Every structure is written in structure tokens, then in C-alpha cells.
Length: 286
Image (cartoon, rainbow, N blue to C red; front, side, top):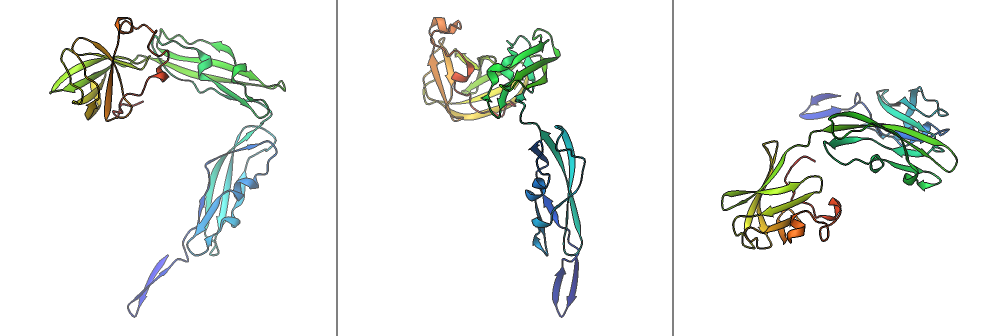
């Protein structure tokens, strides 16, 4: 690219501009498919020549389309001035006659109940969802002790083909989470249960319906997030335990609990955390 001037005019020359390839960085395809499909689905543009996607070629690769594994492929495009651009694609060749097994592990907290089958999903091209066929071949997870553990899963489709995968789980100490309601410049701690996703609150003072309150969240003593001007939709009476819920970040509801519910009874409370409404968004990391 150059700039020339004469008689008060500026002329921008784009003769040396470089084309640009746009493509997915990862590409998954079945055994026996045509590698040129990757080039056909990529795009390339040049300042002078415009859309030159049709000129994209597969320059090099180490792909064996008959062997299922990950490979590398390089795309090349050249414009009319012989300027070139290259783009590297990670190609995953998949044998779709085998079922797909999704088991990626995750983070568990000390003392947390753990069922490895809740952390795996399986799907097959012919059979569809076959999650119910997943078997656990090995599981050494101990949520009573911090550390790294593995679980090995296996699933077999109706054609008798089996996929096996090992997932890693990290058991870590549960962070100390404290939530406070701010009212009239005073802080009142909310009882929280991270495993159940529940907020219970027993206030020493009357907080009238319609009051503007704030929420502060601390993790291991450090302020992680706060929300101001939240409207309390229900009156909170002193020394009565309430379940706090929220439909949005600007409103907070308080549902009075009876004695059994205060003790954690499940006759009225939902059985699973998913049945509770989400707490106000506070910027707390998930």
C-alpha cells in the first residue's frame, strides 16, 4: 500500500494489500468426507479483488479421512497481485457409527452429594438420546477429601458399538458465602444454603413493604458484588423467618415460613434448587 500526491490530490494505492481468510478454527466431519468442504465453507476478501472465497485452496494437511482423530489443515488464498494469506484449521474426523459421549467433569465442593451419572450425556445418530444407557466403569471420587479424581464412563448403541470416556473432577473447599440485606444503613445477615440455592432471612427489625434495600455478597470475607435500590415487595416482620426470592434484580419477595419449613422440612418447599427463583444478580462469579 502506498500514497502518492500531485496537483493537490492524494491517491491511495492498494496494490500491496493482503487478502484475509475467515474460517472456523475447528472443523468436525465424518469419516470419508471431502476435505474440500472446509475450503468451500471458508471466506476470503481482498481490498482490490473483493470476495475471493472461490480461490481458497487446501494447501497442506496431515488428514486421513478414514481414521477418526484430530488433524491439522492449512488453507491458502492468493489475490491478483500474488499476495497470500494462510489459515490453520484443527480438523476432527469422527466416526458417527459410534455413540457420542459427553462427560467433561467439573468442580465439586467438600461434602457435596455426587452421582456421576448426573454429569454425563450420550447421543447416537440412529438411537437418539441414549443417556440412560451410560455405565460408570470406574469412580474414585471422594467428596469428603479435597483433590483431583476421575470417573470413567461407557455407553453402547444398538449396533453394539461402545464409546468410553474419562472425566476429571476437582473437589475443593466450599467458599464461605455471606449475603447481607442493607436497610437504614444497617446490615442484616441472610442465611444461605449454596447446595440448595436457598436464602432464608430472620430480621430483628420491621422492614415495611415498598422499602428500598441493598444486597451485599461476600466470598471468604471479600466483597464480591452489591445491588442497590431493590424494592422489597412484602413486609418483613421481626423474628419471623422468610424465604427470599426474586423475579428480577430490582425486586425482592419475602415468603413467611412455618416452623417445619424453618427447620428445613420439605412438605411445602420445593425439592430441588431449580424450583426456586434466582437470586438478584450481583456480579458474583458463577
